Image (cartoon, rainbow, N blue to C red; front, side, top):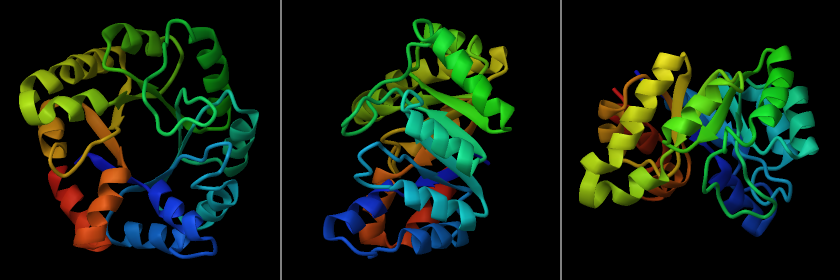
Length: 238
């Protein structure tokens, strides 16, 4: 079964909109694990507009499943946090300061030397590495040369096209995944995956190991309840 890691940034966004501690990010993470999720993902940004660095430290103390921290390693503050917390996985994302949400993968050719250097730092601390890439064979091949353990396929283009041309939408991801498997890279995926498009993606993309889902899952939970929603997503991955 493909693992489900739930990104809880949006819970922190709601908390921060009012101030204080409601909703409780720690309780949410504990509940999400209890409801069957296989991991917790957070993406702390330099402005701490949702998940804060304190949240990350507090979550490390209680998360019993896989803890995945996403972020841009060109921020020294992010590197220091990851090396302090030592999550099971770090996912490197090429965000810029103030970016609303992730919107592209790494140019693994242009950034090969940098990625290779920073990935080696994380691996020295026994932290599994994954890098955000578009479903482009050149970028997947480039990822192999960085020394990363996994790639995370950026799935926004799949989600955007799914309702009108789902076969066309998933094809580049199938090809990218097949190449990744040939190169010995693990395969994660994330961004705009939802109850509507997740099962088809899972059924068609070979070698998929893990999906990270936040915005859609937390939004669905407003209507369906958090426990029910987590289990509905898990059923799509069976």
